[in-house]
Length: 592
Image (cartoon, rainbow, N blue to C red; front, side, top):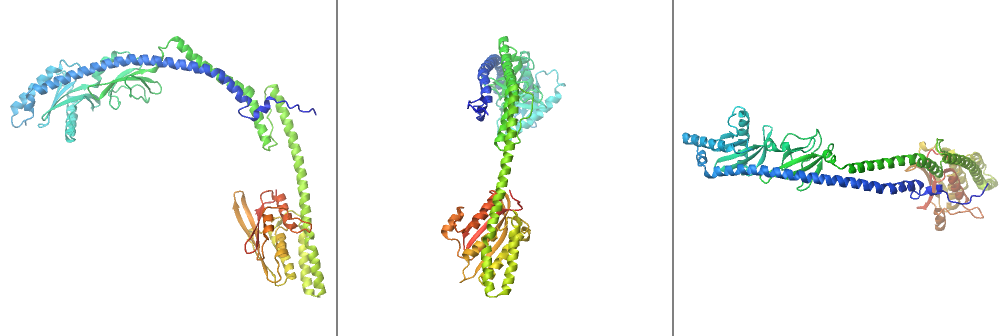
């Protein structure tokens, strides 16, 4: 095999996102194109803003001019009404009750009618004069065109009813009459109302909002553009509003413009009246404004969109030809690094270079997978051999002591105990011979441990007691053989004192953890507990092996659990009233 020369290729740079080929290509393309696009976009928007400002200024001046004209007409009506309030004595007569002196009241009313009718001829925007005597609850309306009484009779009646209620409510609330021209809606139509109060008599005028807008109808505000009146809440006083469902806001700023609406958009300019609580607003379609841009600006706009489209197409091509194949390779390499050795790059039509890379990667991944399988099988065989060795290492541990015990009993000619001990030893070694399997049911392990304790009770009469508590639902759980008996044997070896009895308690319980259910095997005795130095070594999982084989059983159990369960099992040691050992094993687990 040719030695690898260590030269860095472009593929080694894919490990870092900031140093990846994809990142550099995209950044390079954007560095070239974005400044040009940004300049074109800025130039285009700047041109549109300049045109909008020019249109807004021109139309704003026009709106201000018409607003001043409307204010002058309204001021003319104000002056006429104030002159009547100041000079006409008929208002004093109207304050009196009509029942006290009927003729003077009607004469005064007739005189005021004639005065208001004569004055209405010169008022170009006026719709109605009105007179209301609060004492007599008498409402008189003088239309501008008095020659058509029947055509406006119904409207006059509704105006009288609405204004009568309005005057009563304002008087009840302690409010003055309409001191400025105020928008009011009567029978679906908007009017501007102005009233002066002389004693208990109200004298005022009504101007229709639509009549005020007649001169502006001849102003060209573009297709679908219009002008209208709005109240102080920027609500329209004329029914015509552009767009069906288009949220158009009439709010404006003095000497500036705002854009409103969605599709289409409108440029809003307006002017507030000095004579009342209303404004004159013009809505100019933004599309008609942009149509007035110079042809060069339109070209710039088209170039901007063309460049953006070019960037998008270039990115798509770059992604398809270069980035997508690289991403596929990177994705499978990440899987391979995470241990998914079945990762393969799917065969696709692409460049020759990428096809060679894909084939090389797939071949390499297959070889790695096969090598990993071979190594794993060898490790399994090695672990199984070590496990068998550890199990066999325990078997002779008890053999010499049992022979020694039979020997002494035979010398004492205690044949009954010899028979009982012999049967116990038969059961014991029968279990030991079958314990070469990795697992036995917990029931069999407890029975074997109980049989072992019975043998020791023969050896140490009246010195050793045992209690086993286990729920029936745990008895079928598989456990490694001799895992309990080893610690019981260690307890008997180190805790038995002929001067005082020792009790061994074995309990089985369930424990819930984040990794699933586990069974906890608790082995406790009433002996002297672990010596401090030994407890430190056990808790630190240090090796307890020595030349005499002391505590080799504990190390043996730990090693077997690690081989079988990996990191899913553990053993803890502590002292309370004696030594306590807790073994935690996965429930219903059959091994690694």
